[in-house]
Picture 1 (spheres, rainbow, N blue to C red):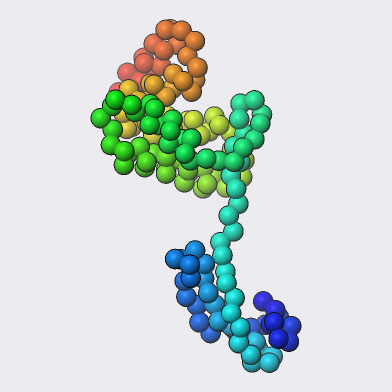
Picture 2: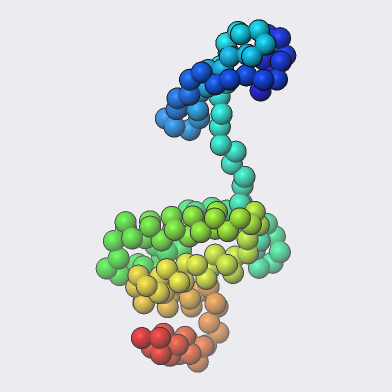
Length: 151
């Protein structure tokens, strides 16, 4: 960090404290050359997560879309909103933790289905039927049979 007074690049931190409700860190520094003090703010860099859609187009990750899809799948099911929110939060967290800045919709869809399978089987089948674009009753039955075998 360059001293704003003399331009020297070495300083020591005298005091650190959270600022802006924990979003930044305020640091008081002292220049090792001229001994003058100055304040710096440190913020976490947000790198956007980009989703690659099936058609190859790209858009920024949107947790609200996942939340809406899970809400639709859980419609008229005894699934608390807190559990639905948790699924969306967990999917977002796993996508962020993947260390990839571009992820495919297939990866996100599989994450959602994995979470729904443990939460509510009917919601899982509803989501899978839309996500995997079941063409007829046979594909639907294949998915149900897979679900029954896993039990």
